[in-house]
Image 1 (cartoon, rainbow, N blue to C red):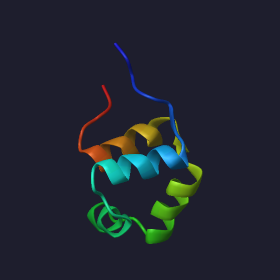
Image 2 (image 1 turned 30 degrees about the horizontal axis):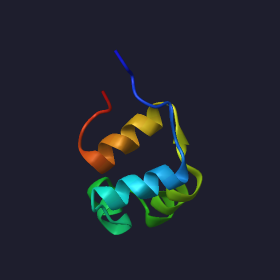
Image 3 (image 1 turned 60 degrees about the horizontal axis):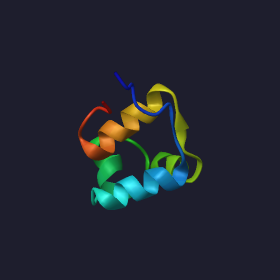
Length: 64
């Protein structure tokens, strides 16, 4: 069983958001994040469990 990526780079987050038609403002509003935090993740990426959480927040599904 694959547990999903332990990291997401900034460009991967940007690509995923574009693919699923999720805007920075929509993601921030839906999950009570700041625009600054969303932009920070888009620039730097995330690792570990945060990568799985961000994948869920963008796609609506937990990584398999």
